[in-house]
Length: 194
Image 1: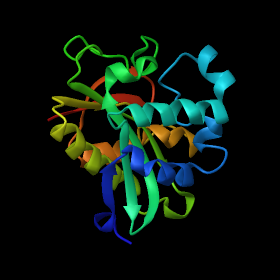
Image 2 (image 1 turned 120 degrees about the vertical axis):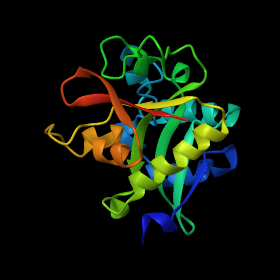
Image 3 (image 1 turned 180 degrees about the horizontal axis):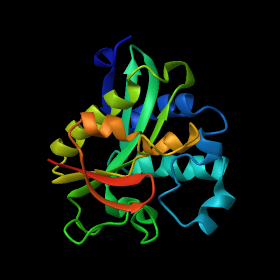
Image 4 (image 1 turned 90 degrees about the vertical axis):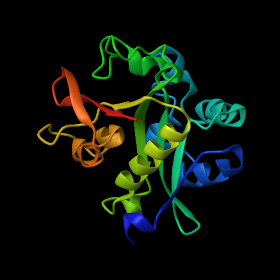
């Protein structure tokens, strides 16, 4: 399988069963269901598991799509949460590597963030992350975004595979992102002008 053979599409409500299958019965990332940046930890932790699943399913059903899915033929193999910064308020927290800069405020609906990746285990290391990012760039551009930002792990930072949910810096560099700030060690704030 090559990354170019993957089909990347927005997560519409009809595709919810594919995301459930991808995340598994317990939900990706210890039952987070991609709510990590959507609410403070005090609110999020009691919801882990089924509560988080229900909350995110409701978000998907309301729309607009909160990210993109990658498919290898009929199998959903990856997910990237991507959308306006304002939709993920915890990503804008002033103590994070992703803290917004004055020229790209979180309130600007045309400033988007690529915040969370998840790739099915058997497809890891096969270009799914790059394909997801390429699809997210197209989705953001077609949705009217002016900037797409991310805060990946840099190549020198020691990390676990769980920490890579923010993506590796090299994938963003290949896609044309540039570092605009470094607010935390090992986590550049990167940006692509659309």
